[in-house]
Amino acid sequence: MTADLSLIFAGVKFKTPVVVASGTFGFGREYGEYFDLNDLGGICVKGLTVKERPGNPPPRIAETPMGILNSVGLQNPGVDAFISGELPNLRRFDTNIIANISGNTVEEYCEMAEKLSSAKVDLIEVNISCPNVKAGGLAFGTSCQSAALVTREVKKHAAVPVMVKLSPNVTDIAEIARAVEEAGADALSLINTLLGMRLNIETFRPVLRNNTGGLSGPAVFPVALRMVWQVANAVSIPILGMGGISTGADAVEMLIAGADMVSVGTALFADPYAPLSVTRGIKAFMERKNIKSVTDLTGRILPY
Image (cartoon, rainbow, N blue to C red):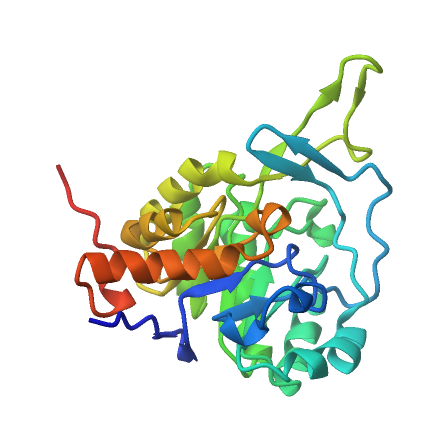
């Protein structure tokens, strides 16, 4: 039996359930030298902002046991430069393009949603872990009200499916997920990075110039798995699960916990071929278990 890895996610057809995570794949040019990008289910591009951003000063990336801390600061060329300079190259490949957007105001999110919809990306991923400058700098994703507000307004300006990326740095992620679903989100992605910090005991200074950063990699996988499971039991819209996935077995776990698709991120830094090996691992597992469709894995977790 040949396993069928294709699925419909938020109304979009995917060849496989494996995509690459925003911020870890750039715009695909570098990784295109390693393998054929046509083999990916989708590419979630580096986070975009309205205007070009230089990012934070270095040091802004640090290794930790089983992961990395990053405080890159959303370095990117801006949404217009992406549409004119990067999207045409990405469109050469038979894979879905997911545009990740970050804003400091609701208006910025909406402006980018309109432009990217007109440019015909396949999905828009809304990063709500950004500070709301009109609310004293608190991240949009830390309250049901602000998360719902961004979602509701972006949906008014987007002509393609909207997927909201949830922050794990909250008290109750399921509560945020429900609010976002009620506001009209077509899908959810989770988790974003966990806030972390390291110190250099010789200099008495933080390892990162920005003091804190986002923790990703295998160390966060159990937390991500738990949160995906919680959210899957709270909402009915599809979920893109991510956070520390580096093997086919990790991906299968995430799917069984309730994810419809999975995203590979930090693993790319250690192994550029990780998304392909994860895809092969899912397929091999399905064939060994005689599971015909990858959709049959989602939420298959059994109680004791």
